[in-house]
Image (cartoon, rainbow, N blue to C red; front, side, top):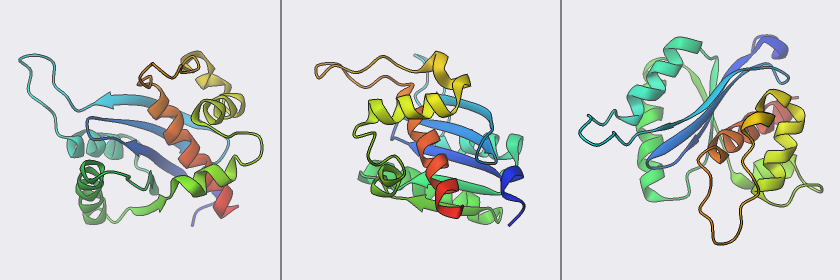
Length: 161
């Protein structure tokens, strides 16, 4: 493995119709982040998830891809398609359970909003996109997938440290 502070990973959080990503260069630096939808606009052609991930892989050339274990069948199918592409290009992959991610933030953070706040504290460049705390009647903000991906990346580096 290359030196950990220069090790580039692509951390992903996959949902059936969208995904969040964060590109890390070492445990203390983010290069890029975002949330993408796989739904096309009305009348537009739908771009498959695999193509969008492939574009990120080509652009950032990560040494490893880190994902959260999927919790639905649709997410599992999406992840399987990504893993098939990644294996063809000999990129290391690592899947972390949501429990493994929560263990890294244990004690001070019990829910997704608190974990997202902890991520924003660690990476102030993400503070401007931190969604407001979700109320029980509200659906989850699309930007939360970025913070879920960042949490997976942080957990990956914490396990390898």
